[in-house]
Length: 308
Image (cartoon, rainbow, N blue to C red; front, side, top):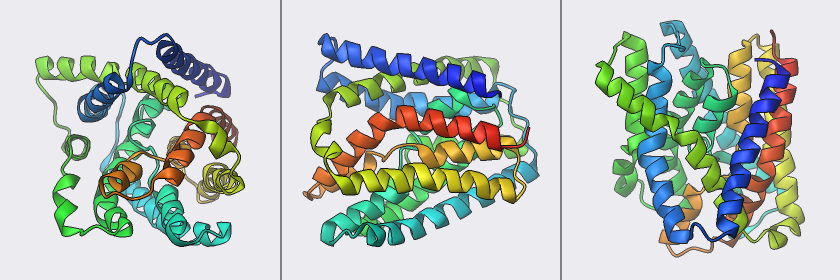
């Protein structure tokens, strides 16, 4: 995929986000509506998009491709866990802020934003890496992530079996064994999945319009986090993967997975536990808003660096 096509598609994403901002300003949606739409996207549309990406015939992955993606996913989250330990120290974070920066470094928006963005702007085979990353995300957050938050791991293992996780694993099984679905099911999955990009980007617009960015933009440490985690780390991964001989698809996919903004799940779980979430919410607001620009630039860079 050429640099120009990538830029055009990110332009489309920006327009969809702007539609969400406009709808919020006009009062077409409220917070309750946004929550309900988010649930539809997370539990129905995103899982359907994962399966639709496998069934549309554009993904031709061998067993070796799948095993390679699994290896990359495991290495990716091992790197992020190490980053989560080191980055708070580099930033000089203390106490609960150190914990929050740890979570923010590891658990980004690879599902809600990562899946539809990958479908919209990356080559079809890139979705294999995105699916694997989302499987590892679910496995890791409800074990490691909840432990970092101070929750009991055992009580949260059942949450791993969420709709996205189940559909991602099924998609990998279908890819491995070359299984097909009956046309009526495949068509249904396709129609539901096709709604994901529009709904998720409009919801991103809702989120940006609601967040109070002024406080976040005044925090030098959040700016430093954004530069190190959302800019420098993706660039490092692009050049590392290029040096290791990975193909263009893998490099673009992992660049996107590294560049997506801080995710909502740590904040949601922290709120349920009655913990202070001001830093998490500020970081989500800032990184989400700036990611529209940063992802565009990083994918453009990856397109230039990655082998043809």
